[in-house]
Length: 406
Image 1 (cartoon, rainbow, N blue to C red):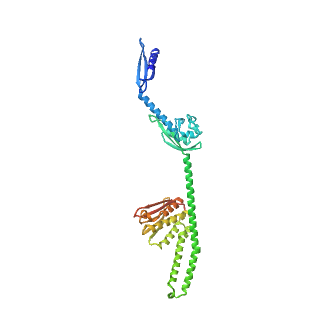
Image 2: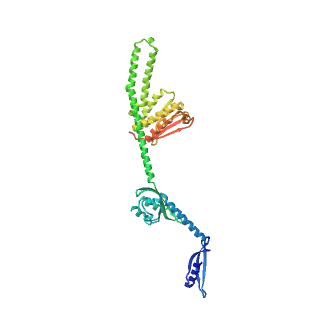
Image 3: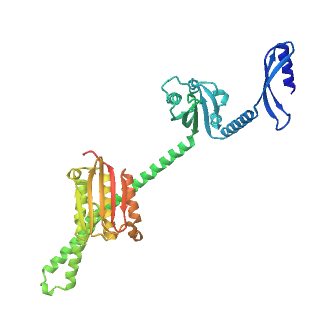
């Protein structure tokens, strides 16, 4: 109570109002008081003392101060930058370990404008624009390289009790290491895709050489043997021709047909000359002769005339062959429909069967073929989708950007 008594004496002596604070009773658990001492004029020295209990207010302020200290300690251990700016874009607070990571101290940035800190003069700079929009009540974000580090930044308006924006709070996350990891991953993915593309190209080249070997070496030998046998049989009376020779001729003829079919599958003769539509139609017509499954083919006239990049045409043909082959072998569908058409700005290839569906066929080992279709589609920038329901068939759909006429 000593400060209060002293202020009473001074107020009476000087006839001036005095105020102050005290804790009473003293020690832990005391009440916090704010007092005002006002002298009262007259013959006797008197004073009016007003006491206001401010204990709750003091405790609230202590709690706020403790939270601020905890927040500051937290910011000092986070890999971020946190700052506030006033209406003049002057930094009023800055914290976070990101400051030290830049080789700076908070005191070097405090009370300086963003123009000074970033060493810019452009009023339309993205950082300046984002902060000014925040002062107008808009949330903003931007990415910024600063002192060799990459930051993802967000700014928010901070309103007062009346809803007026009085400052801007900003948070910046150092994403340099993450961005480098993403770039390395993207580069690795590109290298893997390039390797896969080269492997598939090598596979196609191998198919070409196998087809050439069959055409140039094996088929001539079969044809020669067939001619020799037919010449021999022509000189004999049919009744005296052994059945084994007749059977040998039939097998050689069948071998010729099978060899030509294999060549068409390995190296479709129309693909390079007339394009995907013509090659796919010819392949389906040849396939229809050897399967009980009904094959339907439809192509729009405009699409039939389109030419794609050679690798794109070859991969689309392989996808169609794999999808049709899977449907014939596994789906038990009486009919398979293949179509090539345009939908808006997309070129769409579909293979539709009406069989058991993929789930019922899962145990029959189609995984490798489906994976190969997906890889080929990805390498030519196409989207592969497979829609299937048990007992309702399967649709393989490939979409890619519609090409310009070549």
